[in-house]
Length: 129
View 1: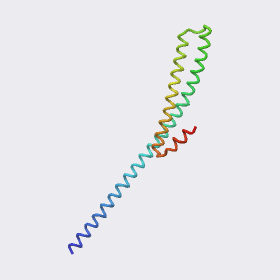
View 2: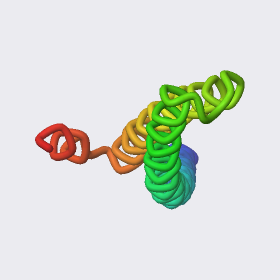
View 3: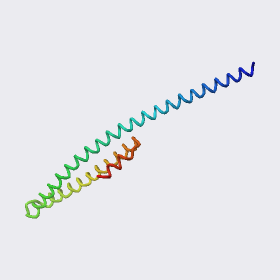
View 4: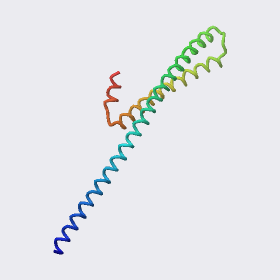
């Protein structure tokens, strides 16, 4: 009789242990799912911000290019000092750098989004354009 009782006790103990492990793994899975969801949402926001920033820097680059052309023409005709011409050069240089950085930020945000979603096709589709 004692042998039967020990067997039942061990069996019930193993069942409970397995139930606790299963419950623990379910909670771990739920936590990971929530973390990935949060990372995906953050990546989407960062991507949208990067795209918006890229559009803004494109406008700034266009404005700097126009200002550079204008100051170049004025300087060649002796209607503006060298300081203004140099400032236009600095502005176009800065605008080009900002635009390149913005493009890089879009790619980084896209990589983060692909990583969070576990879907490399996001990057593959983007490289086709």
